[in-house]
Image 1 (cartoon, rainbow, N blue to C red):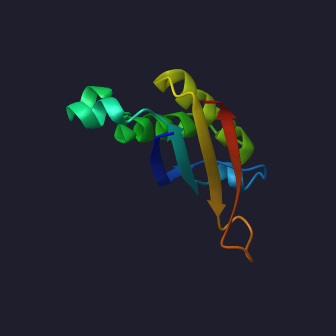
Image 2: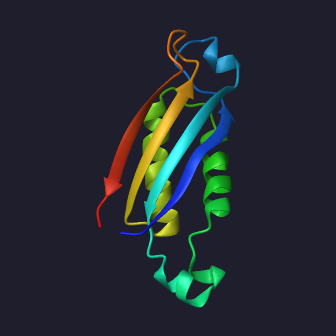
Length: 117
């Protein structure tokens, strides 16, 4: 299975359950593994057959920053569903990390996998 990867997509957004969190921007780091057949793009060296990681990154940033969200679990589900629907990806693994959420941990997060190959 071929994959297209995005690592540590940095998104500044309003995220959290506490009232003080709803008044500030915090950083989320998003990792994506997306099933994609890279053979047509590689064989032709033609962009039209590639999954554009720049387009995916820009659209996901817009999606996540559109409105305040309370849970990183919600972000993960939104991202997975959007990638599958918008880009016709059959399987995706999404990790959403929230650095600094716990003072004694470098980061906390969730990982989900959706779809199948």
